[in-house]
Image (cartoon, rainbow, N blue to C red; front, top):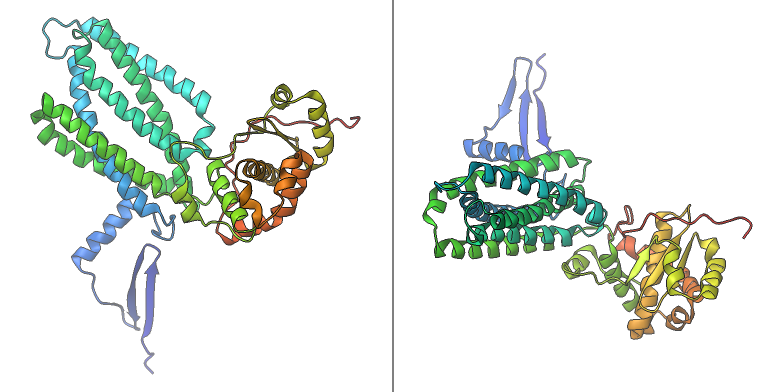
Length: 428
């Protein structure tokens, strides 16, 4: 008796197409053949896109990568223009230039860049997580400013002179800041894009895409940069710099993060209060409204040392506030122009969210009281820290429910909390 053929279908995560097989007792047959073009497209996707694309990455992945690719091309072209000017500044092609002076200038430039990289990472490293969009744009602005200084360095003095060396050192410091900002914020964006614990794969494929773009930019530079001199070089710099900044702006604006940072949380709280405590704005809407050049959040210090509110408030008010709020694992103090949040040693991320939520409510009650017509509680929020705490705790369950319905994630929280924690004394 002859067995009936067995029909099989094979699918992959990275393709919507399926391969069909017919299995008989004699052999395995493949139904249909892929066209050569289909095979090329499939191979290109495997080489340059993360495994499982598009399901393995965030919904904004492709849009961001397209704009990021365009800005990388522009940056490569302006970098090539600057490279020629830097060589001129070191004295390449000048018979009277000193090799020793050029070597010293080169070493000084590298040294300044190293010091700048260390200092910037020390001062701003933690902010790169919760404010990665702004610092991503800052990196691009600093990059273009450094390239401008490199382009102008031949005008600073004779090749190898101290003034040229000083200009190149400053440019090197700026480029070192670009390296820290760009690398750290790229890591934060990669963490957002990776949806299957595939951060390494997303990062590796991003590097492959950037390498391909740089290869095309290299061919362009070899063909056209030698022809661009004098005023044409300045015009080319302005054109590609504008493109670089515009494409970067579009790239950063296309990112829709589900995590909450101070600015996004502020916008969410505003929408929650305006809706009467029933709902809040979604991820896409808030990310499109989020300011990229400044923060719109309430001026607060989360996880600050106790000395911060002590310096801004009367001693009796500080003591009363601590006694009234010690059961909350946090204490919120309202200053004249800022808010201070002291966290207990065992404070959780939920406590941090509650504290910032309370500060935002107080700030809105002081600056936009009409928003509270539907939700109520405006007078309590302005009555004092204890009354404000009760109002915030009353609204918090509804706020958490609205966050969940709108697609927001409260883990991890990117609220820029400081490292200070207060240990309550049992005898107090």
